[in-house]
Length: 144
Image (tube, rainbow, N blue to C red; front, side, top):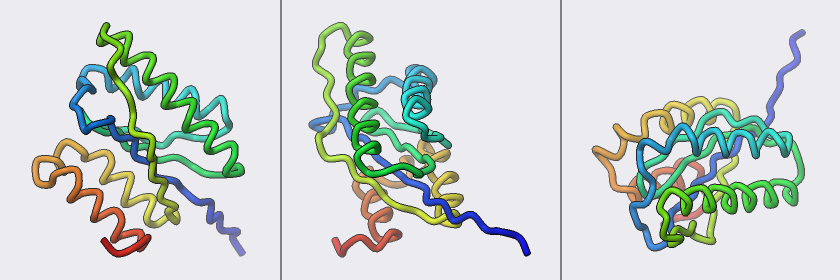
């Protein structure tokens, strides 16, 4: 009989403070590299990152404790903030302090991989808050 691995996947959204549109499309590869390297340093596997000018989605495998997860996410915020502020040359960029984390099973994770990969197409139809509400409803966290 085959053994099944039901490792959880996590979906995290970093939102730019004040909903500003700071993130330039040409930064996507550099930010992806920074985020993936930090996750790897903490023992996580980043599956995909995609973003828009005002937020970034991360999908990654979870296998360590929550304290390590918290430290990793704070470090990603710190390092990407430094990098973005260097690009802007004005030092005004900040992430929102609240960072939602959605726990997904492998089936949902596959669906979210596709949704995250299609961010630009999704945001041609839906505003961020509409997308966010759909994510909350899909994950049954609470009623909005």
